[in-house]
Length: 64
Image (cartoon, rainbow, N blue to C red):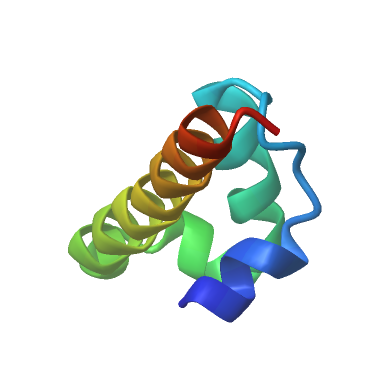
């Protein structure tokens, strides 16, 4: 999923909302609206937010 995060093309200083908006565009329309896939969407969004948080911590650690 790290590759998917990189394809979101969000800046490391972007807000979490920007990450969710970009991630939702990567899902098919049916997947965004299907109640049966709600748990899978939550996992996907949380994974994208985790990668974003890791990227932010890396930038803070190296002061980039």
